[in-house]
Image 1 (cartoon, rainbow, N blue to C red):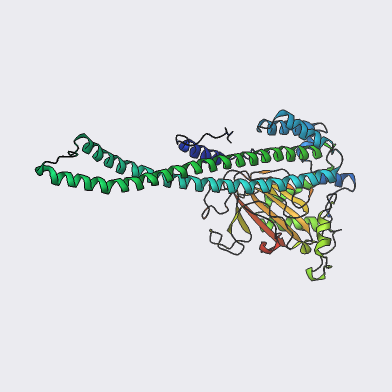
Image 2: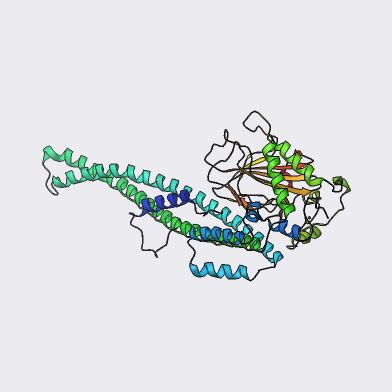
Amino acid sequence: MPRRPASTVTAMLAGALLASLSPLPVPAQPESTPADALRPALPLAPSGAEEAGTEGETAAEAATGAEAAPDANAVDLEQVEASLSLSRERIEALKAEIAAMEGDRAQQNAALIAAAQRVKLAEIEVADVEERLSDLIVRELEVRGRLDGADAEIANVLAALERISLNPPPALIVDPDDALGSARGAMLIAAIVPQLRARAEAVSTDLQALTAIKEAALAEEETLKANHEVLEEEQLRIATLIAARKQGIVQMSAELEAEEAEAVALAERASTLRELIGALSERAAAGAEPPREDDAMPALSPEAIALAFADAARTQPAVPFPLARGYLARPANGTEAVAFGANDGMGGIAHGQSILTRAEAQVVAPADGWVLYRGPYLNYGQIVILNGGGGYTALLAGLETVSAEIGQFVQMGEPLGTMGSRTIGRNLTTSAGNAQPTLYIELRRNNEPFDPALWWADNEQTG
């Protein structure tokens, strides 16, 4: 189930900064509230069975009867709603908006993908705000360090001046024996006053800097709050859309149920990812036309490819996978920790990319395809394997939750699940540690991995 995206670490950072700045003598401020022609011959029944596969009802739901799925969906939605801080009016408005799409799968698909894109953008902005808040904390510590150092120095000077004031030299008549002392006192005062004035100006400048830091922190907190509200709203929208699509399924076909059971059995027998992907791909390709060579693919203009991907009603890949080079969606925001072909930190060579993501980050489908497998596998955490047609597959590993189902057709950019709060599985535990979630991405052709770096869309941002 989706998790609340609010970052505890961010809240702590912002809270600590604002708390440390609160005693400063700053001006009054307004109150701020914190923060598929290509589809392989799968063992699916035509028409209604295929529809069920597209919608992705689980075997467990079929086993419990036709009415069990809506009840389970209702429970899931209640749990999502309970984790959010959205108003009841906004929740009801979102439900009404999605209820108006009932039966219109194309509209539902388009809404899902659009919501996922908004989540991506909000996650990027949240990461940027967190970085800026960290910089503000560093600046605040530097300024406070200077002020703390100035406290003792100024205190000593003021103490000396106070002693002089208690026993001042005569103003008009100077005793000959005290003339030298009087001259020295005057010279000392003449030397101290400019220095004291310079230190006072420096302290005033630092206090103004702290005032500016507090104002910047308050503004960043408002930006953070607004982006968390976007994340919560889109989280609810995505969960409600997924539930709405599942509620349209009366029962799962026997063929689809058998397909799911067979995929799980293959996963239990396979000892490596290569073995699992090979077995799943071989089963999916049974009876299908042999894939064409990449150089035999028809040429399409960028406009034609973009138009194909804009069809939200499609139930097969918009274009042959080779033609999607440079158009694929990055599955999650993050930074690359290990590139394809690099040392994987375990004495081998990486067969894919490893991306460090935010805690509970959204994961979307990198390409159009059918879900060959979803679920736990060995020590990779939750994984998703997509069949893109033509012998191409995409693997995502290290997730904590997965919302797609085996046999379901997913469109590029459609939400598949979420990451956890730490690394799940064995990926990158030696070079990235366990504190940050790690998404492992593999693209394969005829079960041979290839570098995905040049396949992502140019305008995709990763944080």
